[in-house]
Image (cartoon, rainbow, N blue to C red):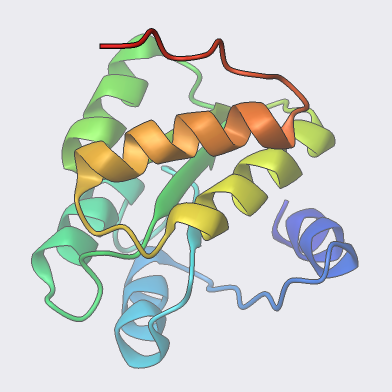
Length: 140
């Protein structure tokens, strides 16, 4: 899956770094502070939920957006991931175009540090990237 994601994202113009396990991924995130983290929940050494919590507790990494990409497509895992600090959740199998849309959208709003504001803006941008239009706001 890592090789597949690397190829898909590289073809879309992204630089991709992978890790063999959760601890290596955390060490890399702290050292290089990536623009975005794609994360599987099933990782040796440090699982995805523990990884999310560790990223959010570290001052250097706490604002890095995290998208969970996993075959554990259960509501409980979604809830646990979001509670641990993930920004989005994509279940496998997934549509490649949807994954790219989510990555592009998250990268557009990554500068927003407030998690609630980032989520709102992410949803708006994701709709635009997918070619959908949000209904106009009602005047106050």
